[in-house]
Amino acid sequence: MRTVIVNGTVIHATGREESDVSIDNGRIEAIGARAAGGIAAGPDDTIIDARGCFVIPGGVDAHVHMQLDTGSTSSSDTFESGSIAAAHGGTTTIIDFAEQRAGGNVLESFEKRMAEAESQCAIDWGLHQVLGGVDKQALIDARTLIEREGVASIKLFMAYPGRLYSDDGQMLRALQMCADTGMMAMVHAENGLAIDVLIEQAIEAGNSSPEFHSRTRPPELEAEAVHRAAVLSRVAGNAPLYIVHLSSSHALHEVVDARTRGTNIFAETCPQYLHLSLEDHLGKGWPDGAAYICSTPLRSKHEHHHADLWEGLRVDQLAVVSTDHCPFCLREQKLANGEAFNVVPNGIGGVEHRMDLVYQGVVAGHISEERWVEVCSTAPAQLFGLPQKGRIAQGADADIVIYDPAATTVISASTHHMNLDHSAYEGMALRGAVRTVLSHGNVIVDNGKFFGRAGNGKYLRRNVSHNIR
Image (cartoon, rainbow, N blue to C red; front, side, top):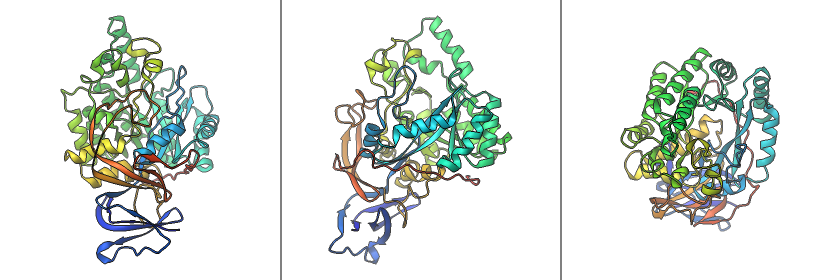
């Protein structure tokens, strides 16, 4: 049975059209311009009227952490609860991480993560592979994952010495593998050794309040790491390089400079760096300030970070908005080890609100509707090897969102669907809202009600590319 979406405005990354969309067997069958008659629906077709709404590709959140084991706790959203929350917010694909730590085995970490996710996800999903112990065997195993499991990306950490940190030599070896294979190297770019010194000095001086999480991770140390990663990428043969959760004007400048030098570099930012600030959020003190501890940290509203990041999105200096969704409940997790910034688990929950929060940039005139679709859906699908996602096109997966730009909502922990006892965006009034979400042509969310099922999401094998630019 076909489904036909009628009377909506289809928004692509490259333009818009007043067209109907037909869906058959989980894929987009046709797009018919209404000026040419649209798509004629048959008597057995299901009709969805999108009058007054945008018809956009389902969101692709390429950076989430469901049920992430930190060693002392686990992020509060399971793959089930987190994927259902994502669906409510118009995201139909997530990419999480399998995490190898120093001394661990890459293939075993991947298999463990697959077992955790495959029966839970309500939407389609994939995995990046974290290399936290870069050695000869880890690099061999990462190559194995390309063919065996369709893993097209690794993640490297320039932060967190003793846990996930890679030194420059390890970074170079991993980037050489990426240049050779076409795998995307995602990099957490902060100078972890210097940050650890600043943290130690702050604690010794009695400066343990939430704001010192940001003050001990200054933007200069994010920018320095971005610069170093870009140099190593070029030396390695111009490996595809993707800077995660970029938070500062300083780091953005380094991305732009690296691109002028021919570096094959891309970067994402996250909603928290577009809307939240050190003073208004980390500056709240205990206990509320703990909710805003994340890495990279929130930046000062007295500098130009917000404006520069929005402008970076507008002109394609920043390619993607992901969430780095990593939620922890406030008292039982964030504050479980006491009121000191260096013992609070890092992370903010936001997978449900990404599409809405970025749409506020459209409302404010920072970006166009087309660019909104591009950074939330089309670009992450392209960069991470998912050609069937992120676009409204014949033959693509029928992951579609009907978005009402005239709707208004207010974010609240009392109404969100994440397994989280607070919201970083509590009380924020939004223009625009998700009305209907389809995954493979099936309605899984409609007017706030969930009609999907845990386990219905498909694992996505992804492609690598030697020609990402």
